[in-house]
Length: 355
Image (spheres, rainbow, N blue to C red):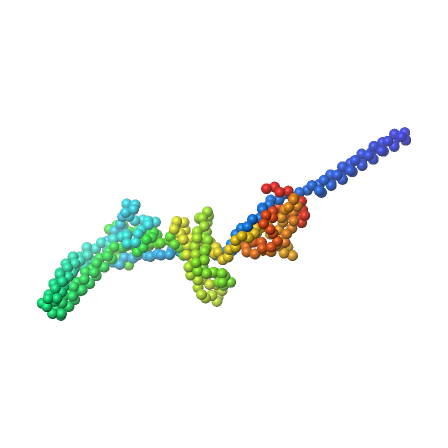
């Protein structure tokens, strides 16, 4: 009985020892095998730019509202490009007649043909008097009187042409029709009435006001990157064309004008845009995502990985923009920077690179 009892106790004790040993081995394995999954990037030399960002509404570089200089019967002309009456959005060349005003009584009163004939007669008479004067046949006074008659005839004819030209409303420059008040052809139009508005917007302008701290960073012809939600996949290039030399004492800002190249007409006057003025650029440096930097009491740190171990590195930063930051000390080219999973890391943590 005692033998059997002792054997049973031995078996139980042995089983417990095995269980405890197994538990100890399991805990040891968990402690030594836990690896935090991370993603890394190998550092290479890059460029980084710093921008001064602002917003505003663009406007056309040229625009004009054409009014009727005379009263007359309204006649909208045909666009030779479309073979239809001119309409909103049509591109027009400088000098193109968009609208004609007809007034037979006004044209008759100009007496254009008679004044043209009178100019021809005065020209012939002047030539005759000049020939006679050269031969001694007339006096200098007679020659000058002929010259006066010719000059007066020319002024009279030219003025008639100017008045006749007022009956044609032309595009003052190459541009796009953006306003065209509706009028029925054949109706009477009064003098001073708006006929159409034309804009040129292959080059746009933007007025901006920047804080005075940026005055030393901005200069003429400085490049500007232009974006708009309507052209999310495109970035247009502009430049600073004007800079005010004074500071507004109330807002502590200075005014500048941006000129934007819009030759593809992606932007339209009145659009709200974002402008990023390139204030500084550095090439051949270490650039990392801004989100990977952790701020500590003793400075900024990031994590790198080598041989499956994460190391905490204190860094000194330089230029930064919205997404990236330059590292001027603390990292080396080819270091493997942790870009995902760094939030739970500690110095010397074991990691598993998953990318």
